[in-house]
Length: 119
Image 1: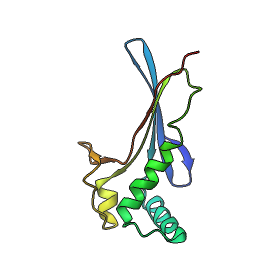
Image 2: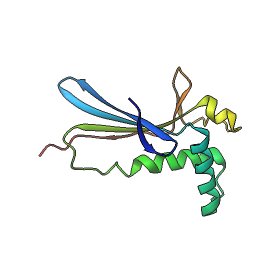
Image 3: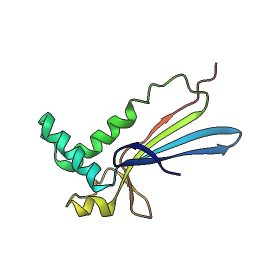
Image 4: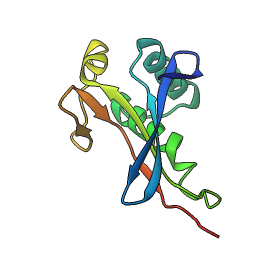
């Protein structure tokens, strides 16, 4: 079930059980037009000279990299910001060659996996 993370940004929170271990998987959907336009406005406000798609990808990495050093979790965690081929195309943005594109046209912009830290 989608959870509102911020205006125009949605995501999911799922628990995956495998081999006796639990992993919380968090996604961040960055594919709404308003979210993409907001990201590009922030590019202008900080004076970035990156091209639009590289800036969006770097911003997505930054969103999840803040969790990379987490050390108080007892379960495995994963954070995945994503976009869509359709949303990027609507703004004239190419799909970066460096990202994974899923069968449904979902573009995985970044991934961070945080292993469990058990006492």
